Image (cartoon, rainbow, N blue to C red):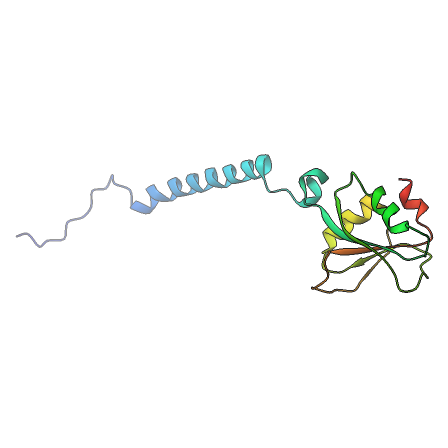
Length: 149
């Protein structure tokens, strides 16, 4: 048995000199592939999808100015938009001059969508997790601005 310390041959490179370029090359290819596919087939934010691909926004339409059958007329004007009217009603006091969206359970992205679809920009928050819709639209005396669209 020979216990002498043999020197490695001079023409053999250390292992790290071989594996480092290979690993870096593979890493560059993987990063480039991920970047390419994320640009081609990447996740789109809701703003990038068409309205027809997003779920309908659930709303309660409430007559806030006392005009007869206004809630049902306003709900009819929402037909063809991506809005599901869950119920109709009247406010306890018909005092609303301006229409307003009340956020009940919805989020800000859906609020922006609803504002765009209805034209109503005024909004307030009255969060209620037990409410039967994400938003309530209280229709005010300015309803003609929003029905004619």
